Structures are given as structure tokens and as C-alpha cells.
Image (cartoon, rainbow, N blue to C red; front, side):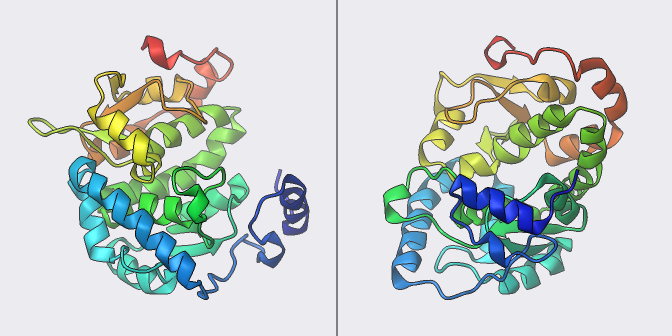
Amino acid sequence: MEISVQDYARQCAEQGLRGDYSACRADFTVEQGYAYSEEEQAVWRTLCDRQSKLTARLAHPAYLDGVAKLGLLDRIPDFDAVSAILGGMTGWRIVAVPGLIPGDAFFHHLANRRFPVTNWLRTRDELDYVVEPDMFHDFFGHVPVLTQPVFADFMQMYGARAGDTIALGAGEMITRLYWYTVEYGLMQGPGEPLKAFGAGLMSSYTELQFAVESDKAHRVPFDLETVMRTAYEIDKFQRAYFVLPSFDALRDAFGQADLAGLAARFKDAPPLDPGAL
């Protein structure tokens, strides 16, 4: 059931979310409002400088290629300027949002090659962790891999198919796919070193190192059905990380999946324990 902007803004205010939801348009977008303070610019550079030292070693080349082409590190990005570059590469563009938005609106944006990015940045006291998704997570974490055509196609397909899957009663299942790939995905092609590409890892100083380098991290070969059935962690390190061989494998597996059949078989089944895979 779709929710109105007014009702959603009221709920967000009651929950104490910091974004200005009262300024939302009908599609839950807002103006970026590029008027960031010198302190906010300094926080952005601190976050990027610190995280880039890790991503240079641990991120997949596809992610690093996107960072280099979009130029995200020196100043808080101008959404329109980045959209002009990104649009020429994969047809995607950035739209500003005040934070989390309803699922229907989020999927609609993805299906139309628009990626929602929060327009505010965490404070210096929140360098290591912020409860709500902020601009650093959304931009530094998600946007670089949207320069990759195959992954960009998967994201559009995800947006187009997610709503139907939720209507089948399998909302948790489709969310797990996003979580374990877009947010916490690892990749290792034949003869290649293990690398990360998921946004939750790219924007986390501690979990990125754990997921790629720790001998205590539990890494599992990617399998779409298993991913969609596996529970995940929200406020702690994941107890399993799925390893893709390529973006092609992700796009093709999802494109060929019988989501209605998977929903019918597993939507009411207990989720798999990620530590027992």
C-alpha cells in the first residue's frame, strides 16, 4: 500500500529521523541544496581519505574504476554534475532524498535508472557509524559501481522485479538479495584475488577489512536461492558473505530466476542460519 508524502513525513518526524521529509516531492525526492559548510567538506575529505586507503587494497577494480571516473574524493559531490558523467556511461542519474524512502518509491527510481542519494552528511562524531544511511554511504558506497554496465542493468532489473516479488509475499527474500549483494557483496573471478564491492563494506572502515582479510569471516559461493533464503545481520558484522564470480553471474541468475516459484516454496519457511551454510 502506497503512503502519501505527508503521512511518511509525519512518521519520520515521530521517529526522529534527521532528514527534512517535509520538503519531499511526490516521488520523495528533494533538492540537494549544495550549501555545505567547511566543516562538512572537511568531514567528507576525512571519510574519503581514510576509506580510500582501504578500498585501494580491498575493493574490486570495477569499484575503483568508478571512483576514478566520477571524481568523488575532493569535495562533496554535486549530484547534477555526477549524473551528467554517469548518464553518459550507463544511463543512470542521481536523485537527492532526505534519507530512507518508502520501498515503492525506491524501486520505481531504480527501475528508471535513478539512484536515490541522501543529501546530508554524518558529523565528525559519527565517522565510524551512523544509524541512518547518509550521503557518504550512498555516494561513496553505492554510486561507483553504477558505472559498470552489467551491474547497472542488474540494479534496474532489481527495481523492476522487486515490487512484484513483494506482492507475492516474499519481501524478506528480495531484501536479502539486495543486502547480500548490493550492500555486502564480495567478488572473486577465476585466478583473481578476493575483493569487495558492496556499499555497506565500501563505507565501513572495520567491516571491509574483516570481510576480505579475516580468517574468521565466513565466505560462501553465490547461489541465488540460498541468498534469498538466508537471514542477515543489521547492527553487527555479517555471519556470512556471498562471493560472486562476476557481475554477469548476478545479473543472469536474477534475470532467469523464477521468483514466483521461489516465493511459493520458501516465503513461509524459516530463514537459513548464515553461520551454518
